[in-house]
Every structure is written in structure tokens, then in C-alpha cells.
Image (cartoon, rainbow, N blue to C red; front, top):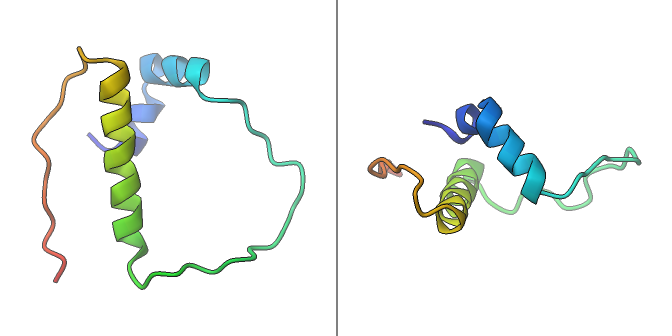
Length: 73
């Protein structure tokens, strides 16, 4: 299950809303620091795994599936 699919589940969204601070952008500001990688997907994947690990740490009864390793080539 993808991270996007997970956070769209009603039960997951409710739990995330309880633990994540409310954030609302109040200023429309330009991007000041450009991406510093030629592979932004890798950064996204790293964030996805870090998020999964943290959610599992907070909820040890969470189900997990095998991790997929993507060929970087």
C-alpha cells in the first residue's frame, strides 16, 4: 500500500490528525532553495520508509509487508 493510499484511509487520517500538528500556509512565498539532487524520487522513497518506521514504532501491532528494493539503474 502506498503512503498516499494509507493516509487517505479514514481510520489512518483520524489517527494522523491526532498526532500531527495543524499546518496552514499563510504566506505565498517562492521556493528559496532548489532541489539538491538529481533523483528526487529517492528522497521521497526515503521519507516514505522513515514515515512507515515511525508509524510502526508508535503502533507495534501495525501490519507490514515486505519492502521492495527498486533497481536504481
